[in-house]
Each structure stands twice: as C-alpha cells, then as structure tokens.
Length: 388
Image (cartoon, rainbow, N blue to C red; front, side, top):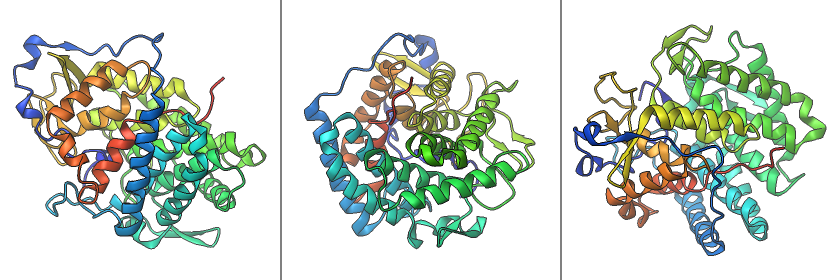
C-alpha cells in the first residue's frame, strides 16, 4: 500500500460514520475548540484501570499466540503489512500507561511487555520493512525504517520506565544510539519508513518520544540519545509552523513533496509525542489538529482528512469519507485528543465510534486484534514521565 504511512490507526473504528454524519454538517456544527489550557483530565477510576489492564493482558496473549494479520478489519482487501509490530507496540503502550497510573500493576505488566518487545524484534515483525534494508545493532539485524525502529524503541522505553536495568536495557541503549547517529548524519535529519525515496515526518513521532525518554530513563547514557531527540522534536516543531502547515511527505534531502497538512498526519504525531517528556509540543500538535480538522454537533464529533475548504476525494489514507469527514482522522483523533485540553472532543469521538459499531469490533479481539489494540491504546494515551 503506497502513500502516507501515518494512517496506521485508520482501522474502521468509525466506518459507519455516514450513518450519523450528513454532508450538511457544516450548516449546524461548530469547530472544536478543544477546551482550555487549564482543564485537567479526570483521574481514571481504579476499577476502570484494572479492567483496561486485564483487556490488554488478554490481548497480549492473542498477539503473542497468533500475531496480527497483515490487513485491516479481517479482510485481505485492506492490506496492512505493519500490523505485527504495530500490535506489539500498541498493546505494550497500553500496559505501560496502566502501570504508570497504578504502580501495583507494574510487575505483571513488565512480564508481558518484555514478551511483546521480543516479538517486536522478531523476524515476523520486520517483514514489512525490508525495503529500507537492514543493519546490525547489538547483535540484532534490524530494518532501517524509522517507523519500525521508533515503535520498537518506544516499547523498550516503556519497559525501562517500569523496570529499570531490565534484560533489554542494553538493547534499548544500542538502538537509541544507533538511531540517534543515523538521524544526526542524515541530510535533512529525517529517515525513510519504507524504501529510500520518500520520508513521512509524522512517522518520526514514536522515535522522537522514545529518544527523549531514553535520555530521562537512562541518564548515564543520555549523551547518546538526548541531543538527537531534542533536535528531532525541534524539527517537527518547526514544520508545524510551515506556511502551508505540517507537511505530509518530504524527500530525504528535505524538499517538501506533499505540503498540504492532513488530519491523520497531525493526529498520529500528537498521540505518539504524548508519551514523551515534551508535553508542550504534543499539546500544540493536538490543539492544531482539533481546531483545524475536528467539529462537533448534536453530541457527536468527527474529523476531516483535509483542512476545511480543500476538496480532495477519499484515498487509502483517509478511508471512507462523507462531507469531508473521514474514518482515519476521526479514529486517530481518539488518541490525539486523549489529553486534558481536548478531553471533551475525545469523549464525543468515542461516542461517535460506539454509535457506529465499535463495540462489535471490541467484542472480537481474536478476529480484530489490531483494531482492539489501537482502540485500547487510543483510550489510554498518557505521559510516561513527570514533566517539570
């Protein structure tokens, strides 16, 4: 599947959105303001945390046993080759977030996250990224893909957050150091996710968060990761202020190839930055996404793939679209808006998804492991370290 790879969350969570939303939404809707900077996210109920944690554990068992099929919604018509490593990363992130909020869960979480990390490092999770070539890192043969290495590194960061000096800590150090060196040596400070000809800046968000987390969690080794993490987040921040907005695709040399911002791109970037220590940047991406692409009406919400006024047809990135509102940015929006500033729009997007049939997907984790993993992650996204 070609095109922007940031549609990793375009999983049909809102595939029936047309039943709720009409092309005339604009006449009776208002753009989401996303709340104010002073709002705070309600603390999750302990029973709710335990329940989500139990679901994540059961999903981990499914993922480790059968893997995630390389397609969406149980159909080969919608190929998604990255599914194996995506499942590992999303389930692991859900476990980490639960244990950060409820430390008594840490011991059990660590045992599953370590298994998921090893699965992410296995051959079956690497197949989709062969086009980027491979390199040896700490006696491991890893694809060069920034998306693959970013998801693996973030999983290892979560493990380190709960269990310092664990069996994979040296692997965490080695991948962080290798990736940091490659980013520093690259012409534009960005790396491809697939092939070697195109770069998707949003795919760098997992790596950006993970490199910064490495500096915080491995202070004795932060010299190998912190400068690269700071530099990468600064480049993402600078791009947010480009004249036409955050670009979708660039060349390895940094030339903008697709300048028009997209809802999926901003939402993906915002959500993954949320796990890291740079909450200010995550907030800016989230706010820009919600204010530019999301609208609410009648107790529901949905998000556009393109800025209002830009009329492009649906594609593999947007998913099904009606009246400008699309599946992918609305599904991604669940993760991008799971924060204190945008909690209202998050809750309305969740209501839309459930009205559209999400509960049926959630009731069948063995049939839809990737969709379940991503929803679980999208509804638990949070910072993993304290920010001063």
